[in-house]
Image (cartoon, rainbow, N blue to C red; front, side):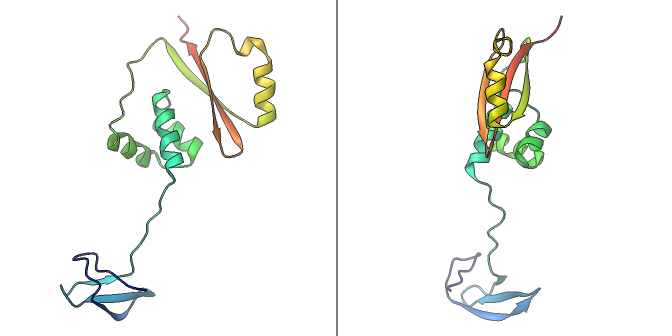
Length: 138
């Protein structure tokens, strides 16, 4: 396995001991010491897209965190990174439900659940999220 120096990009490296049970390397070009690269916890683009969609639908960072299992701080950084801005508040607010397929089918089969409100359905693994806009009570 070729180890590339994270500082200068050189592959002219040698092993230089073990630190915290990780192999340490030394770059012969720039003299930098480093351990094997961390890949970090990479999150699938699917979750980024869903988080941004839910944010635009009016859900808070913490609501999105509970649904997706991704930190609200991470969600906030995605929104800043992609420069997402929500439209101004309206007289509608989102109400959401997490349903299994049979529950979703039953919900949609009732006409009273589909009248006088916008509705969007999106899939999360083996469940479905139903977002419905209702008017604020006056």
